[in-house]
Image 1 (cartoon, rainbow, N blue to C red):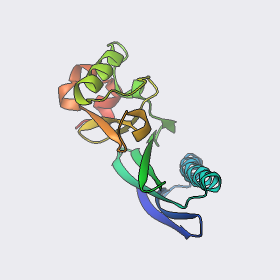
Image 2: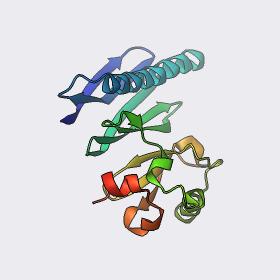
Image 3: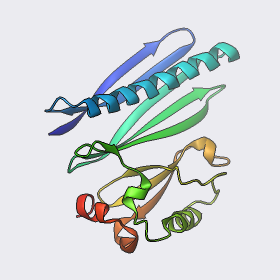
Amino acid sequence: MIDVKSRYIDIEDEILNCIIKYPVIMSSEDSIFIKNINKKIYEDINIFKDISKEEVLYSNEKSTIFIDYETHLNKNNIISISIVFSEIYKNNHIINYINTYNYDLRNEKKILIEDILNKKYNYEKLIKSSIKNQIKELPQYITCDLSFYITPKYISINFSSYEILNSNEITNVKLYFGEIKEFLSEYTRKYLVG
């Protein structure tokens, strides 16, 4: 059985405050693959913390970082988690980054957008048109290396605040499985939908 537990790090010092809540994937089996995912998550958190601390040293202004996560899917040994990294700096300016972690624990592999959508169809065109329909300010770049998470009802393609002009929020574009049935891969139909 797979479970996701919260861990916390709270640091307050003269230059940087950190309020961090992050996930740890737990399994009844001793899995090296799961240990590596947890290690990757912890490393990503430390990288963000270290970069923020370094920026504060150069700017001479105190900063606060918040890190929080959400488990969007934990079904059929498939896990989808998003972590939002936020930094408040320079007179209450905020920047938000999002990282996603999508894994098939049974097959010990990272899930890519190509695994979710059928390769026979031009799913890149579907993604780009969905982005254009749902976002007023388009991202500066739309690549196939998209940040996304999976829920039981949809895929959410995510953009960090720096990717959208004049935004300090995470922007989500939702592709509902029921509306894009013909684009879904056999893998998605078997393990994610229904």
